[in-house]
Structures are given as C-alpha cells and as structure tokens.
Amino acid sequence: MLEDTFRYLVGAYYGIAEMDNYELKEYVLKDIENYIKDFIFANPIKDFDYDKEARMVESERSLKTKLQDSLIVLPKVNATTELILLVKARLKEIREEELENY
Image (tube, rainbow, N blue to C red; front, side, top):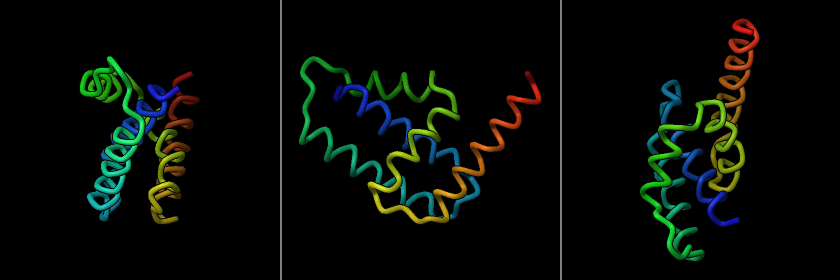
C-alpha cells in the first residue's frame, strides 16, 4: 500500500539521520527527502496526514526498523556502498545488544 511505502521512506530518512558516524549524511538525507517528495507528488494519498504519519514513524519506530527501512531506500537514491555497509554494521550491533539483553 502507498501508506506503507511512505512510512518506510520516512523511516529510512530518520534511520540515516541517526547515523552520526557518516560524514556525508546531509547529502544522502537530501536525496531521500527529494525521493519522498517525488513519491508524494506521483502517488498522492487521499485523506492521509503526511506530517502526522512522519512524526509517528520518527517517534514510535525503533532505530532497528528505521535502519532496515534505509536498506530498502538507499539503493534507490544511489547511496554509497560505504553507507550501506555502515548501516548493516549498526544493525549487527543492535542485534548483538538485543541478544545480550535477552
């Protein structure tokens, strides 16, 4: 559904926003932002509060989910392999932390 696609696009944005160890983050965030704008323009969703949904994704989805979303979106915005590998490494750290706390 279009609503779910919008949510994972926004999740990817916020996941990358939390990648402090990537120096070129601002450029990728701008690319994702433009991709989201293009998606909304091409696929308007009637009676859908984009701002409300974006705030919900930002506050309620886990970092793990946002980073997983980013792995879907990063190839679409031609992100570097370096960033994709950093995201995968961070996801691995999160999984290890989860296992330690389990």
